[in-house]
Amino acid sequence: MTQSSTRQKLLRTIVRNLMLPMLALSLVVSTVYPLAEVYAETETEEQVEEEEAEQPEVGTFSPQTPGISDTGTQILNNAPFYDSSAGSCSPTGSVQLEGNDNTEKVLNFFMSKGLTLAQASGAVGNMMQESGVRSDIIQGGATADENYRMQNGVGYGLIQWTFTARQAPLQAKIDEMGMKITDIEPQLEFIWDELNGPYQHTLEAVKLADNPVDAAVAFHGPPVPGYEASADSPGFVRVIRGGNAQEVHDKYEGLAPSGSSGTSSGGCSSGDSGNVNAEGFAFPADLEKDRIIGFPCVKNDYCGHHDGTPAFDLYYNDSNDAENKAVFAIRNGVIESKSTRNGYSHCYDWQLVGDDGWRYWYGHSHKPEKENGESVSAGEKLGEIGPTECADNTPPHLHIDRGTPKGHWGGSIGSRDKEFVPIMQKLWDEL
Image (cartoon, rainbow, N blue to C red; front, top):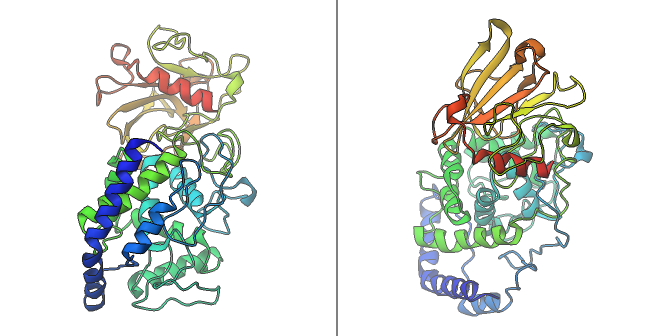
């Protein structure tokens, strides 16, 4: 165990001991003022010491809540997907998530939506405090069976939804998907619905986080009211919930949750969505790895583009089969300046303004599925590679580059970012 991790655990123990009276007060407050949705088990000093004594070395991580075990033992390379055996990428219908336990399923779910590992870990860190990442837990620690019905004023599930205003739509989601109240899948889908609805500000804050601790704080809130919005103090949230998130992130950094597939198989089938890596990027076209011309890149700042700039023309070197292949969002972002190309009404170019502040230029496409101003997630289908007339009478291909300096429009020969080359090389490596 490293010296820094030992210091971190000591700090967490000290903070827990200092905040025991505050936690007790928060439980009283939550009873008197039910707008604070709180699920917290006050630990005795002996319990804290016992828990810290049982903390495993890196690689044998177990969740904070006693009795919840991490069964994952095999770690594969980055692959945040739905289980391919489920036969559906739809948010509705019976869907089974990849992962050997709920922690891994939650990570896979949020990463499949375009969040980074650090951002997904922030959500898990909060769930560890709320429910031990259990979808069947009732406030107080009892376990629900499939016939359980949520009760107003009693927290339930991953987030400990406590009041009818949120329990009722959660139950509607469960019924819509034809699943059981104890299943994790509808609860995660409901969280995603809320994060894209009344708690969109929380999702936006999480997407700005570049480390798991900040992601955990953003997921909890502020911004007000925050998705969790418990009575925990800001210090407690950062040290305990953020500490949980850091441990989860450190376990899986550079790896993937157990049970996941390789980045070229499993989960949502090719053509429907792209595969998102831990940094939040997705390869921008549904092309077969070994047939794409130009890779591996010949230099760190050049990958064979015909004009010598750090841009990419993604196509096959042996045929025109790239036509009609899906084009994907390389990052979460917003579509900007979608316009027709060379006077052809069916040919389109556009800019994708990424959530990382960079602009990505897409050229030579057709059949667009998004309009200007629409938000997109990394890996989401934007359209298809167009025919030869969309590509200036060259073989069908997708042109993509990134403008520089950061925030500058892409598409111009004189302002293409050379740092985009290693990003694309890595995405190709991961196919």
